[in-house]
Image (cartoon, rainbow, N blue to C red):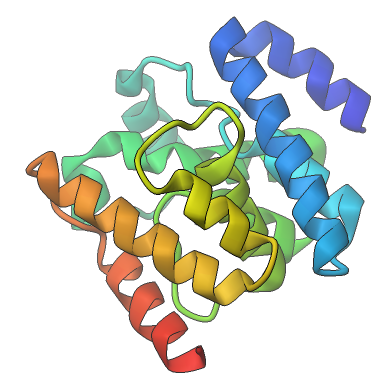
Amino acid sequence: MIELIKSDLKKYLSLDRYNHTIRVSETAIELARIYNENVEDATIAALLHDYVKCLDKKHYREIIRKNNLKIDSVIEKNIGLAHGLISAYFAKEKYKIENMDILNAIEYHTYGRPDMSTLEKIIYLADYIEPGRTFDGVDDIREMAKKNLNKAMIMALESSMDYVKSMGKEVHPLSIQALIFMQKEV
């Protein structure tokens, strides 16, 4: 299945997005090995996390409507956030993936949620810290990700939320809830 997904991704994604996806997959594999998570599950979730990212955003609303997918008001205002939900939908429909951990890892990789599984955290972080990312503080998060997944999640969520606020956008409530949950866990 992994080779089929990679072949499809070459058709659906731009070269830059495809290369990002491969780097996310490599990072997810590394983290899965560190945290004794299923490497195949991590690979599949990482490869499919941005499956629809290169679709025109106007198609997102059409896919959501046609397939009766549920979105909240924050995603309604920033439809780009729906790419995880839609990618998870295609993972289930096209590739017949029924593993809810993989589907949740794909769906919530952008903004997180409270009580994330280890796989969900790995995909969130792999997307955030893959080697192509160069923002301030990413190296510290990369190092922490290899030592303590929850502390790395706190750092990544705080950084991401600061970035969203600096862009004048609304932080997804699940990001706030995820951060509070992680802070209690640590």
